[in-house]
Image 1 (spheres, rainbow, N blue to C red):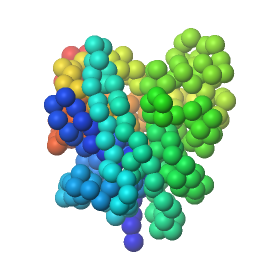
Image 2 (image 1 turned 180 degrees about the vertical axis):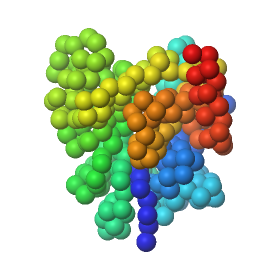
Image 3 (image 1 turned 90 degrees about the vertical axis):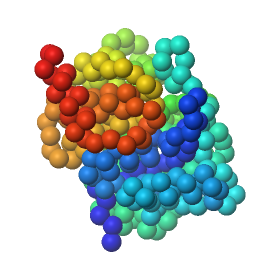
Image 4 (image 1 turned 90 degrees about the horizontal axis):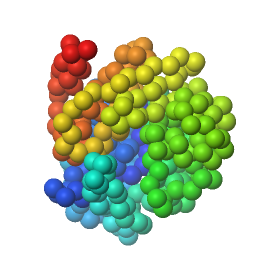
Length: 299
């Protein structure tokens, strides 16, 4: 029997950075950080039967992360993303397709897995192919708290699918650019708060969080709002910092932390990961707490 309080679904891949290849994929990154925070997550994904797929699976199982729901594909290669920073220190992605995680098939074992999970985390990228999309929508019918991590990468999304996913979600995370784009589909609001409210009203969402890069994050839950200004750090790369943020937030909320406490820790973890190379570095949570404490002393 599995007892995973968080289940993540979607892409697992190698981020090919200028400095070399590192493990990546938003759902895998979230699962990795949840594991580091003691939450024993499970990840539903698919790799190729190639060496890079075996290396990813062995890497995560060796660290203790559950890989029981990693499927293997003997036709399609393990996912790869060519990532490079632009002049604004933002990462630009070239996402290879089709790859193994586009073909995640249904497994009856998912029913029992989701029955035990408090949160089900999914993104929009995994819906770019009908095979994984169909599996995702079956999972969304049985999942409890459905957490949508919007991940809009051109040309791997369309408005119709994104709106369908928003309609299924209980909790949505997005960045400022995604907020502006989605709110602009049906409103003319210009403030972050008004855009957020317009999306919440349209899709009946009571839980939403927006990450704003160096300007922090805004969390709205059940009529209560919290804002954090963010932490000033020396950025190595921003790959996976948003995924770490989400993992930190869910870990705190699952422990019944207040929204301000949860948002502060999530912001601290996201900032810390931006000081490291790659999305899944080795670290201790004491390092994150030290960063938060140091910033609090300055404030």
